[in-house]
Image (cartoon, rainbow, N blue to C red; front, side, top):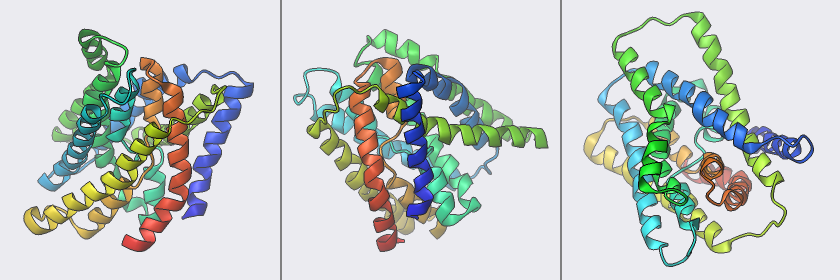
Length: 299
């Protein structure tokens, strides 16, 4: 599995080089990701998924865990930082890099059959990022009214509901459509990882906020897997909506490092982007050892 992860780290390195020597701007790339590429991925995921109760619960499960962790860390860290650091920490506590990082890793482990399940969990994650997560982060630099205005301008929400409507209408899809989406899926991973490198290239003083990184790691690498296991156990014993393969994919995605979108949102909202970039980088490096270890133990 470690070999499968190496290309992702290479892409981060390329992003670093682009920022350092080509002077590429992470703000532009963040806007491209959030306002064009990601909405296409979300639209396609909703449009092509077979709708049933179990399927609908996947994004609900993910969104619920994300919301719980975001609000908990936002409240508990109120007295730790006098600035807007707690806003980006709360955001990242509820996220995971299940798209740019988790998707290729899951396909490497489970094959192409995992893509549909991953897409649904990504929906839950992006719905969190586009609603509560975005609002909490924006409040670190904007008023409530400004934060809400920015929230409702996000195309991610509209892509979700449009995909849902067209799915229910059973709209036929052409080969050209699928070929086009495949291109966007590749761009989604490449651009998402490159933005981490771009943010790192702008750091002149590599100073680690150990409190920030420690709490982010606590949320991502301990509480996320723990809560996901509790959700899986609840479904096994009470609801019985999902199957074994889905449980394994859910658990694997809960091990993903901090979301690269943390850097994207922190950048466009001007809320501690360098702290976010350093934490994302460290978690991505840690995941190189952590994920194979956890997979060998639990899967």
